[in-house]
Image 1 (cartoon, rainbow, N blue to C red):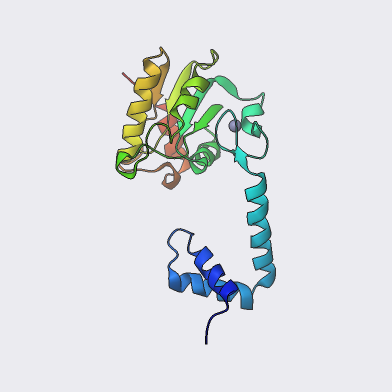
Image 2: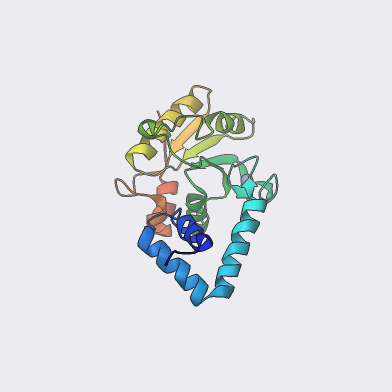
Length: 199
Ligand SMILES: [Zn+2]
């Protein structure tokens, strides 16, 4: 019996999720259709709403529904501090650790020459422009302690220091190869507290 094409299409679409192969995609599709149609409708609605509404904040490049996100628009943050993270997830980790009162810039990736990801793909020009607003006094590099994260921090650090900015790197309280999203808030807070100037 031939599978109906909309079902085939659903299964194929589910495979865009990380770690989902043909078998799990099939299981998910059958689950949604047979056992959880309200859940499926909510998922479809959530996806289409998010796609229609979510954009990148003009200041921090994280996800936002307006031109400037809530965090960047907040009067309670210290505009002299700019923390550079790889992803919106890392920003969330920093916020949950409650150790930082400044603003952010989200790279949406890391430099990875082998994958063809260069300075343009991590919005380096925008970061430099953002950091040079005359208000930022310290840029804190909080990329992960992976090979790519370290290389990215180094590259950004050079670019910003060349323009006379003070640049610090969060401390190596995090394990080698460590990713922000896998450490606890206390460790992250300590790493921010013990940040060192890049030279
Ligand atoms: Zn923002």
